[in-house]
Length: 199
Ligand SMILES: [Zn+2]
Image (cartoon, rainbow, N blue to C red; front, side, top):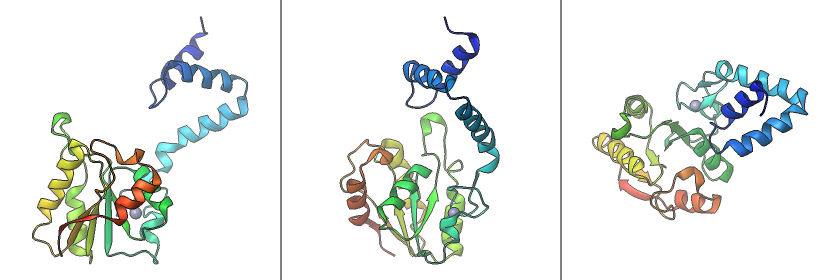
């Protein structure tokens, strides 16, 4: 059997998304022969929760109070794209076709799990729309049940505001999480978005 420290590390790593016990063991055996990497990883992981915060406007991960996207004066500040998580921001940014702002929910509304609009920061989003001159809100959420519930909630709450609401739809198969869409599908979905509500 493995020594207990190794066993503990394997079990801990095996809990991470995408890793099972086999790959966790492989990583651990690799780390044993790379002590400098162990030290670097240890430092980075220890610092991570202290160095990262949520941008006070868009709730994307940032080392500063305001993230580099919100700070960028060349961005179109009249458009906000609502996404579930920072991976979605990264994926859309890498397409280089979108120049607006984002709002990161970090969750989707899920009655089953007791996750409501509050956890998603939606009141803050509606407040931002009211005080800033936002002309279009793009809903770029997964076409899963919770994604649809969240999209409907957002749309409902914007009915009385003078804002255009669009939603990426085309090409993202039902039930698929947005972060797993390939770049071409995501690009098409963003370019051919459907209008849910005119301004
Ligand atoms: Zn930001």
